[in-house]
Amino acid sequence: MRVANVIEEGKLGGPQVRMVRVAKALSGLVTTLIVMPNANAGRFQGMCEGFGVRYCKLPLTRITKECRAAIAFVLFSPIEVARLARLFRQEGIDLVHASGGSWQYKAVIAARLAGVPAVWHLNDTAMPGWVRRLFRLVQPLASGFIFASHRSQEYYGDAIGTERPRAVIPATVDSAEFDPGQSYPSDPDLPVSDTAPIIGTVANVSPIKGLETLIRAAASLRDRGHEPHVLIVGPVYDRQRGYHRRLIALVRELDLERVSFVGARTDVRPLLARLDVYVCSSQAESSPVSVWEAMAMGRPVVSTDVGDVPRQLVDGENGFVVPVGDHDGLAKRIGTLLEDARLRHRFGERAREVAIENFSVDQVAKDTADFYKQVLTDWQLRRDRSTRRKRSMDE
Image (cartoon, rainbow, N blue to C red; front, side):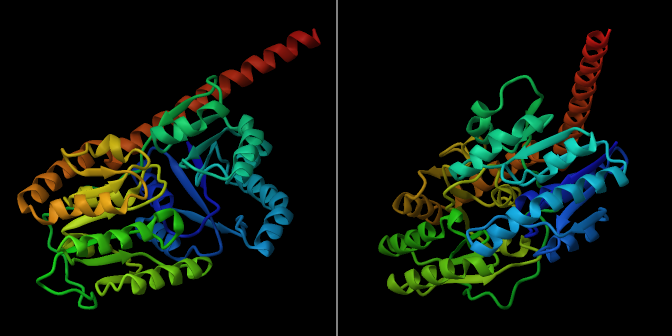
């Protein structure tokens, strides 16, 4: 089976990591070609090369709030759809996997033009109204749907109907790679001391990550007698410079001295290994890879109630979950863990057990391959029925 897995966002994030890991695990069973945009794809390309996964770069535009980018998206989308359809024919693709969410529709249309089925991978739990309307228009062209979480399935379920195959398949993490039993080199550039505890998060600096909630939680922790180092690990892209400046201003306003934006890391494991508590302060998620990686590393996690996190972190049993935006609740739960080393250890051990059981690369790859086969079978049956109806009408 030859699959083209297409994404219109080049930044390396959860969907991109999932694409590469699953493609590698499927090699020998499924031949995958990852199709990515030219822009902002350096780290994504590097990961493909490191894993030995074949990829192709095309000039794919993406929609943003910037006027010029939006105009370019509208003007060039038809050309890009045609280019994708031509690529699918040239590569002899059997099935197209449209990754990245509901706004990334070009691969779905191109698959229909190329005469092959498309699986649409939906990992959103909150999108603007115009995106949902666009999705409703295009979704009949998809042959099946993968949801990154049950919350994504609930979010889009009323727009899809029940006649086409669907599956919930989470993001994946390699628990052998993310292993707290390994030794990791220290990072001499980290602005931390050896005495104060460390909490942190791995996230692109973006409003959806709710980093102001984490910063306000740090202030609440100080008021409770805790002053941990707070590490925010992730890149600041050009279109988020304004948001980054607002966060820096908030840190100064609250007079916090131990909040550090340390930038992106090629390998986040050494940083995760240093954390006493991992924090997810997001406003919306689906199947957050960074949280699953922290769990695999045996870190105790405090998270906002986003995506399928509450399905994996049972509040009070293997982690803590608080309402979105509740910085006082976040601080209270982080403080509880900072005060109790035995509880941190127990939560970390149980979190790793969940990660091993539910997010293994082999299991996610198997579920993905099985769904590909289901979609291909269903698509062929539909084609056969359509052909028979057409012949009956002609006779």
